[in-house]
Image (cartoon, rainbow, N blue to C red; front, side, top):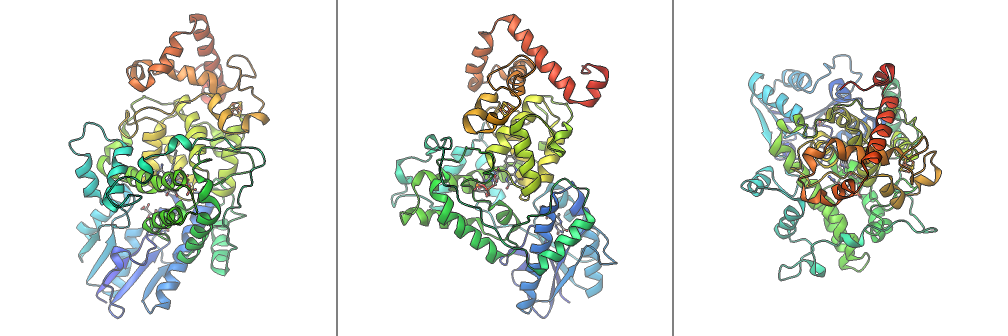
Length: 519
Ligand code: FAD
Ligand code: DLZ
Ligand code: SF4
């Protein structure tokens, strides 16, 4: 055998760099289910099942095309449990002259690949992962020499580079780059909401579901009700469903949240795009075409395209520009432990219980739920960044380090000191009340800040501003909120501080035991 071509679980694309130039007679494609990848965080069982089933389907497709595939199952008796162990075993088994891999989505795995290049007896070529609009070098060139990077400016460059939503003379369609001012509506009563796209598990998926149920029962998250597509064809059907039924109102209600309506007008395409089943270029093209054909309005289409062409590429660029140091920063010096209810859903805060509960059921929450409910709470509480990052990396079907880390560390926790985004998205209960119906069914009163039934977000919000005053007051975008704090009577400030202190002490077992928080 000439060459082992490794394909990782999130690299299930037929045009993958490491599959290019494949010789059907000389080469072997390797896919491996390994314990190390399934447990570096306690992934949601649906995330593991989705990837294993998608990997198995991908292997079947390659075989159907006459390609030789070695597929190592989790339960294979000789499985070494690591990607490196399996690649090394495959090289020996086939007496291969070389190996080809595609650049991974995680610094941890990249370190491993570099070690393979050093340690293996045959050469290991690492090909660039070109399934993105923006090569890592292109991002670096853009970011270098800029005092400040901002998504909006990066996004405009991407629009120009790739000629997306541009007029023939290179201007943004509709005369503006961004229509977000139209995209912050709360949900009107009685609006008909489309069902998300669902598939019924086939025989391969059912076999994987049984495996995952028996091996990962201890992980947070339910397995019943699994509905994800597991092939490129299925992902394409999900895209079609989204364009048809959800895209037209995607913009208007992008930030809305509602009980019993977990997906609203969102696409639920991130698991497919990130695993390689769906090409982001294909998604952007389909959305632009829907606008050009008059099927969806510009505010929806531009807003949707910005998420993929803008945010998704921007966070990846920052990840590879700033790692490995990025993960270690802690600009707000946040060190409180993550409350246990993130892993159980048991809390009286209805907004948190709703979002954590649906995460348990679906391995999915949409952006505003992640950012303004579970994320906002962790920010206000001052959770140690690494602990909340582990949670996000584990619980969502679309989570990989390159995309999860910048979103949590930068966008939510402001732990990078404002590199990715200019200010923390801190908000009181009022925001949640405005954008959702969660507060109507909550034990707490969103209009109260002090007292036993006061919404915890309110005291925590002001407490957060006070705790981080030295770091945040100078931020021009925080001027208005600090004015609000300045207008407050000192006695009220003290009452808020005490209210937040009591709540935090009651929340965290180690503090509760002693009755105070260690300083
Ligand atoms: P839609 O609302 O339909 O958006 C369309 C697509 O845009 C998504 O499929 C996704 O590919 C892309 N997108 C949107 N926002 C972002 C963003 N901020 N960064 C990158 N891509 C984006 N996304 C992940 O793919 N994996 C993660 O692990 C992840 N962790 C997140 C953690 C936090 C705290 C926050 C605030 C956001 C996170 N996101 C993550 C971004 C975003 O929330 C999800 O991509 C989105 O909710 C996926 O659902 P959807 O496909 O229905 O998205
Ligand atoms: C997430 C994941 C899981 C759960 N299992 C596997 C696996 O068994 N084999 C594999 O090749 N990849 C898996 N993955 C995806 C990898 O963790 C992912 O490729 C790296 O984190 C780099 O993005
Ligand atoms: Fe969440 Fe507060 Fe509203 Fe309850 S009152 S749902 S805790 S924001």
